[in-house]
Amino acid sequence: MTETSQPNAPKAAPAGGSRATMKKELPERFKSYRHVWVFIEIERGQVHPVSFELLGEGRKLADKLGVELAAVVLGPPGGVEEAVAECFAYGADLAYLIADPLLANYRNEPFSRGLTSLVDTYQPEILLLGATNLGRDLAGSVATTLLTGLTADCTELDVDADASLAATRPTFGGSLLCTIYTLNYRPQMATVRPRVMPMPERQHKPIGRVVTHPLGLVEDDIVTKILGFLPDRDTNKANLAYADIVVAGGLGLGAAENFQLIKALAHALGGDYGCSRPVVQKGWMPAERQIGQTGKTIRPKLYIAAGISGAIQHRVGVEGADLIVAINTDRSAPIFDFAHVGIVADAVRLLPALTDAVTRRFSPHTRDRLAG
Ligand SMILES: Cc1cc2nc3c(=O)[nH]c(=O)nc-3n(C[C@H](O)[C@H](O)[C@H](O)COP(=O)(O)OP(=O)(O)OC[C@H]3O[C@@H](n4cnc5c(N)ncnc54)[C@H](O)[C@@H]3O)c2cc1C
Image (tube, rainbow, N blue to C red; front, side):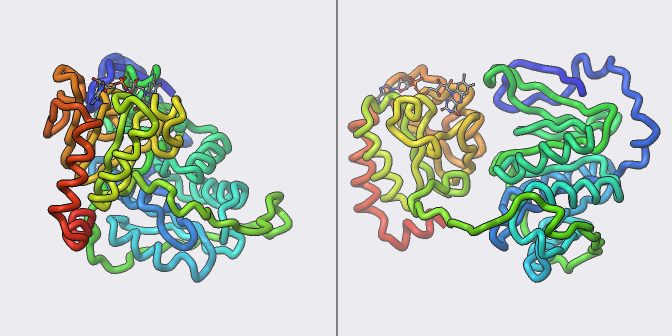
């Protein structure tokens, strides 16, 4: 594995630099590896949206390479058919399916075994997974079992002139972007966090080719046992990554109690709320509300940032928003470099007025339409 790095620009520049001079000799045994695969994560019968985002990205890579895009689905019989159909609607050319009752709930052992067995048999050149809790766990064990390279939390994927995967991710605390190559091993593996890639458009496509494969395990082979499932009871849990409207506050709000102003405006708009990292570090908001490089990536239709300076580590988590409105007392704050609408004002005074205006102006019906 090797890497090149560049200063952290808002969008990664194409890979290049010293890469051009690197000698690449792919060992003979990997020369037959072809096609792009996306692991499809299924949570309680539902496909995690990051899998569709990765199918969109995988489609671009497969088209550049002139190869097929495959969805890889592992789950219990009767619980995966809908997921397989959806993968074709989001761009897959074919699907590899392991349907086995042992895959009813995620356990590292059977999922790793199933995925590595598929890779060994059908030999993909690129394998993408979501950087979710499940995806991170699975990707690490599959990469170490296959002795191949894995680039985690990528922000950009591309193929370079000699058809290698160029996987770009932040490094050194986000101050640099580095592009990492897996030159001598296959498959080239990468994980991407939810919402980093755009959601492709769903198309009306019939189910295509499905290749079924056995798991080859019995329950006694698996050390981990599922004794029960406790659903998360916290109904207030953040769904920031997929919210259409997000209001967030930073250190500029000055005190924990001022975050009520953020919540009130988010509520009036029918959206969700978040914050910058120092706000979490001060204990003013829980970690699940943090937006940015080490928090959540968001892609809302509207993002309102109040009292947030717009540091690069925050910016990378929000720049996919359609409309960014920034409220800051300092007219030279970096957030004004990328906000679409900038308001130089004291957020603590402006937020209640905005909430009041939104509440008076929009009926619940209009708010639903905005949020939808
Ligand atoms: C490895 C690493 C990872 C990181 N990950 C993240 C991350 O995921 N997310 C993240 O957010 N940060 C992250 N950071 C921290 C990041 O570098 C910044 O320090 C942080 O984003 C700054 O938070 P802030 O804008 O709330 O605070 P500050 O930088 O202190 O900015 C406060 C802003 O509020 C303005 N202000 C002050 N009073 C008011 C007022 N009354 N009304 C309106 N505006 C006002 C000020 O002008 C200023 O611009 C990371 C840093 C590192 C090193």
